Length: 97
Image (cartoon, rainbow, N blue to C red; front, side):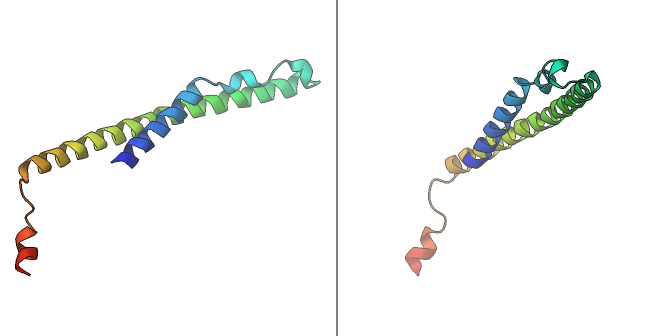
């Protein structure tokens, strides 16, 4: 269960990192490229790539939420089982053996 929590946390961190960094601002001024067409093409590529990453991180966020819900469900089942088992059911077999 701890590994599921770690996975969900790592995924959420990746989503946060993407939300705090957009590729659109990566290009800089068109004078850096010597030709506005090259700059515009790179800007278009970065904008599309960033949009794709945004879509991907939305999907990944849903996966992280699902992992967290699964962890809570496993813990709830484990807690319920712990409360219902007041003794080790295999203890008699070992004692008799």
